[in-house]
Length: 391
Image (tube, rainbow, N blue to C red; front, side, top):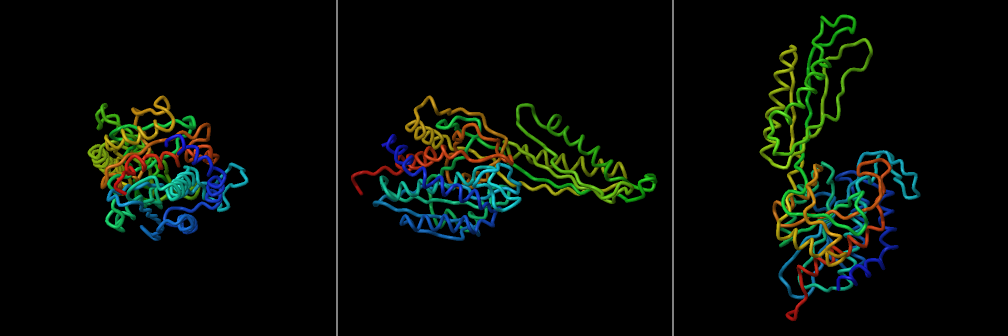
């Protein structure tokens, strides 16, 4: 069964690669995936799968039932692109300037479509499969939007599974593990308000740029001095904006960035200390600071039993030597975490070979990865919803 799953998935390679490249050429940002969602829905309908559009605004859920089994699982993929100007020069490069599939969501969507095609044809399972095509994974709240729209009330699942490609890991290899697999993530904005003046008369100002410089350095002390060395945390300032002219001290400055942690309580500690430092340092210079700190991602935690089951399914396809079950967690974030807070599940990385890094303007999903994702989704379904004599 397992080898034929991979062999059958390879038979779909040309068809699925064409779909993937079409999605890549027409990237859409979070909650704007109208074309992608309609392409997904049309393919599902073509293969005889029940389709539900507009779940969480632009999400799509396909439902496939077989036999009389009462159990159900969810298979999830993300659909959105990033606000990046593509520089691959490929024939299927983005036709929407400033938007790009730089994280491989075009490939994830395609692999789940391939699994839907496989399962609709073979029907070697007993129960219900919910194919969850999620919008807006890149910090725009797509998982929460689907959950607020009653995802698991409308489409109950006993378990849920997701995957993500990993550049630098050989095609045909997988990495997973129990417990925390990806960090919780927050975005922050700090608005510093001072007093503008002529650049030649700084004594008449309260310079927000000076405040931002001092605060930028001070914020780095939070991880090194407020967080235990046994915990993991990252605080990155990714944007500082202020002023428009060479000879004008501006009125205000903006700082923004991200925080990643593996524990919610560590995130709370960082938020508290960030606000304390921002307000006090600004006040020391005679300025004011306002902090907008918002948690966008929960830590993504694999259920131990489901991580083992998912690893077993991968090993059945490629052999135990090609599955790492104790891979270290990453500091990137994944909003699939919110779905796994409500339903036990697991997430896995699959190798995409020698590609550019994720979120890079030269990245392109490796189409040779597609059959492995298709076959893994199919295999975990067949293992979780075994076809027995009762159907």
